[in-house]
Length: 404
Image (cartoon, rainbow, N blue to C red; front, side, top):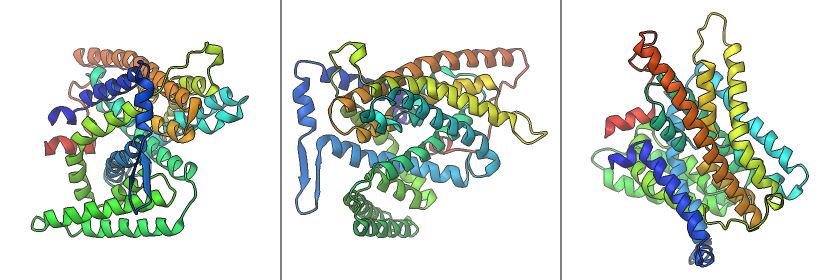
């Protein structure tokens, strides 16, 4: 379990699962596996009728988003985003990390109306993957770099959640959504009555309420992962952190790898580069280049406009390294590629763009983070920088370590 709670191993697992999915899809029996993933499994009498791939992306991924929302709740109340002073610099950098990739993508998609709906895809940052790469290559980096990246990625998550909720809603049923909201409220209330004496009964009831909330949000026409977000924001914070800690090995070891495998089940087009869709090229360039330019440029601006007399919180080369990490879109980008292009070759090419762009960002980030880590280790050895990593306020990852 400890391995699945680490930051490095789950990143390898996620990358391996995606690579396996891509390999399987392009083997002789790949078409059969893809067809099997589209087979439907329905729950009679409920209106819930999804393909196997959609059960993974709509149901299992809702559990992942529950964990994201619990972390978001913590950061907004007690962590790195609990005040305007703390949030302003990563928020400005995150704005650049959203706006510039959109602009880059739209440049490629300008001549092809069919691809324009893909502009949200390169705006996401995979927080788990980015922190995993940082842990692998960033030994010696001051903790402010991790704090900046964590805050940046969480703000990115907020933007991604809003995109999923607003842009990919369809056939809205307000009655079902209202019922789903009532189940979320009941879930929140019940979480505040959980004690050591009623743990089992209340936990079972909360799981039942959570499942009901998910079902009615799905039937309401909003992407069902939003139910996970609502539940994660509504739960009592200490209960949420405890639930997130219990779910973390399952999210890292099963849910995310299974999602990555199914999302990467795409056949590589047997065409010349000139025949590839602008969606692929737009995402492939927007993730590594758009994120790098957007986050570093806007991060530099945020540093320049800081209050007079306030010291620089993070050096520009460190912002540059964090910006490269921000281009690792992966999980949320794969989900948005599935939502923006639900079927056909455009979806497959968009997913290839996410995999390719995230891989390029990963390699670039590994180089830049390694260089900055080496620089900081040299300063520490020369006594020009504290050898003990700086400590800020605790974040969910530190709390998780204390619970282990």
